Amino acid sequence: MDLTWLGHGCFRLRGRAAAVVTDPYPPSLGPKLPKLEADLVTISHQHENHSYAQAVVKEPYVVRGPGEYEVAGVTVTGLPTFHDASQGSVHGRNMVCVIELDEVRVCHLGDLGHPLAADMLEALGNIDVLLVPVGGGNTLDAAGAAEVVRQVEPRVVIPMHYALPALKTELAPVERFLKEMGVTEAEPQPRLTVQPSSTEGETRVVVLEPRAESSRIRCSP
Image 1 (cartoon, rainbow, N blue to C red):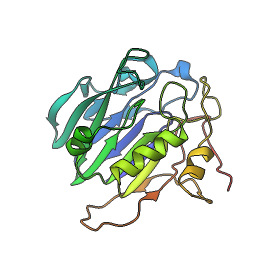
Image 2: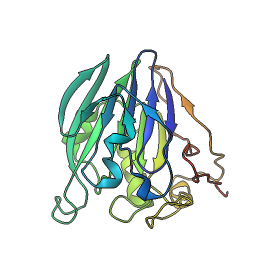
Image 3: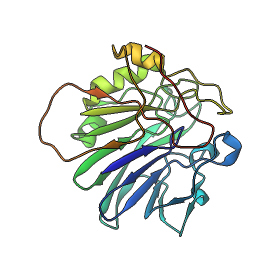
């Protein structure tokens, strides 16, 4: 499975026979998404910067709420969480999505705003790739994101939802999260290819280069 970051909370997951796009955003956010095609789109919450499903052509199936879904051989489990640490009283609800594609389990945390409870961790199960917001604002900051990573213990963690050139929202830079994770050097990669694996080891932090117009980043040590 190939995983590409398109900026903010938007990723494209491409398997052998299907593709998934998460949290597509509108042109008003700043960066410009490329032309996207997918069988399935997941929407973590209804804020316009995470729910612009029309960015994906050819009428994909859109997951907008918790539940279990199977589309084109892709299994998605949507789990209800909150956008803040106050049971959603400030910013509302959020959906965590576990996407299983080509025997790889990817967890997209959306705009999660709190640590995960024990029952949620049990529902997640073993996660190969964790996509975690790190830029603060209305969601997890660097320290909160690092705490959730330690809870989930994925094989790979990819930060998202942080400051980028041309992004018209104020977020912290990714370096704060890297420092929390003890990472001193992280060269952004254009994509990540993940194979199924039963082996366990230390969580690896991978920074992806956003593949959207006007969004290139450079991580300092």
